[in-house]
Picture 1 (spheres, rainbow, N blue to C red):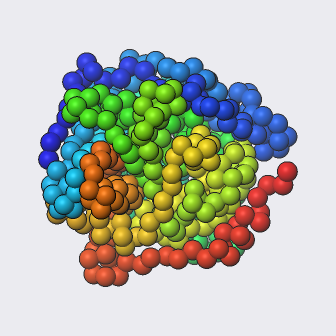
Picture 2: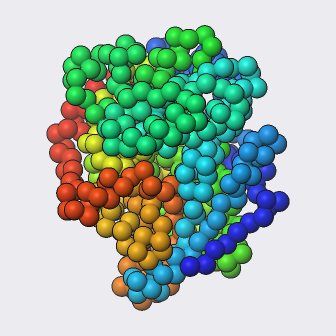
Amino acid sequence: MKKFLLSEKDAPTQWYNILADLPAPVPPPLHPGTRQPLQPADLAPLLSGPAIEQEMSTQRWIDIPEQVQDVYRIWRPSPLYRADRLEKALDTPARIYFKYEAVSPAGSHKPNTAVPQMYYNAAEGIRRVATETGAGQWGSALAFAGSLFGVDVTVYMVRASFEQKPHRHSLINTWGAEVFASPSMRTAAGRAVLDKDPDSPGSLGIAISEAVEDAASHDDTKLAIGSAMNFVILHQTVIGLEAQRQLELAGDHPDVVIGCVGGGSNYCGLAYPFLADRLTGKHTGTRFIAAEPAACPTLTRGKLAYDHPDAAGLGPLLYMRTLGHGFIPAPIHAGGLRFHGDASTLCALHDSGDIEARAYGQNEVFSEAVRFARTEGFVIAPESAHALRGAVTEALAAREAGEPRTILFGLSGHGHFDMAAYDAFLAGQLTDHELPQREIDEALADLPAG
């Protein structure tokens, strides 16, 4: 294994905004009531002013506040590794690199956006935020950031993950935040789900509905968002910007960039700085692959349409690949990827052919995660294992073709809270969830009309 490090003085001081370089504008978010393009005033009750401004901005570079940079320095720049032991195990001529985001206090890439969101809210005098979380990585990150800026945090955690990963909510509590299994009895959206299905495993769409309702019904509370929105992706581009400089240190450039995808912020944060080179003609040969779970295959089997990001239909209509806002994914262990839609920019770039998508089952991604642990030493999150599976597929293709290939994948978080899932895999008890087309069709039947 080889490690490529940047000094703090080489850390990015600006975020990159891909909206400046897209070949065509993305259809705008729509107000859920009027169906007219969303205006900044529509978001003001929920988001901080800078978040709204960044969401709407087409400016290519946006400065990172010094106070945010100061917190980033706790763990950024994060390391880039070359997985030479994995390369040897695969007997491949490919060079495999991974950007390791698990060095943050919360153990994932999520603080990259949690910190600026909490900084902006604190600067506006907001005392409390509400949010959703799938596997708990985002909830952990927001609790961490809230503790730094003196903002109270309420987290609605998808019930399947709440039960699978009890130490995630312990971590959230340790940083001073409160966390509730979703669907909960605290909101009308949660109660409506439980009335229909008292044993509902929950979904990110349901948890988002609860967080939106909580924020909208309290004057002192704003909403924090963990993925999919433009401003969230913007904050995550520190990942790819650093990786570009680190690959320059390695004297290399990626032929393919791979990451796991739920809402899309992790992968977009890694890929978009490299994709900018493709869109502007600087490096046109790089391919981009988004890896998602077969149990929640938004890009590979979803429909491109306007849909709500939340189950209750409280949020704006976003133009995206969707399985339907009422879709309830199977309770796979990659809880952070159990989202019915994806970021609009990601979906547009997938539709244009700039980004490929592949779907993988639980057992094949855990098989790769175990091999990775036994070669490189890192025990990784189930979400990240999807990116790893994509990287191994490319490395084996390079072996078959007998040609070198430079592969970069995003390792978004560690798997230290996922050992129950590893136990199940090692015992041969992990289930692959086959998703019938009928279930997708039923969920898509409830797409908003028009």
